[in-house]
Image (cartoon, rainbow, N blue to C red):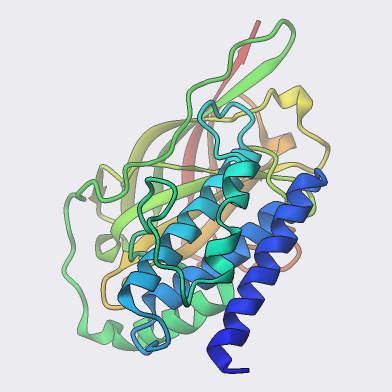
Length: 303
């Protein structure tokens, strides 16, 4: 059996595993499987060294990755109206299984995941090291940022009697090399103690402008669950991301988080930690000793 056939077989097994978990109602496991497989397909699509797949097959792999991400997002977002259903995803099994010979039209009108890569923490670290070695050449600072990332912010939930909703205004983040960050944005997620998502993950739009050592966002993020319904040990994470043009991928530069006992009306500044993001909060290393933080404002809504 050739290496490429083994790879396809591995993808098919992973796909089947994910849809099985999905049909059994094991949604956390299904989401993990879908996201891992989507990342593997994206890596293949974006590999310049790969000659095992034609350009047409790579397009199909990219569309498969998009569908996996759509199904994963649908499982994480209970409010989704136009969700990508399990039965839709199952229609793609013959395609992934027979990708080397498949020559029909793709059954759904989706686009391949863009070339901007989203990498696993380990992969990202390796590429980041190379990038830092190149940093001596220096990049000029940019006073404002184009809207490359539109954001995926969600509206506030309907109020419920006796229940509290939280709006977080991300004001700004302090970084010593703020001017060198291209297309910066922040990914906001709500995790339990095991690092499992409790809410849909949201991305802010690209920052509005920079000023000295600050990147300004001035954007509201609506937490997608009433605070009373969040389990003990919940934390809200903020991952600062920016685009690396030389490597054509989006990198996580640092992260911050706030725990439930820090939720109170008014401004708050929280510390920044070195990547990779540790959603379980066990190995935390401060990004810098300088007084640079993530600046937020909290608004509580209670009926």
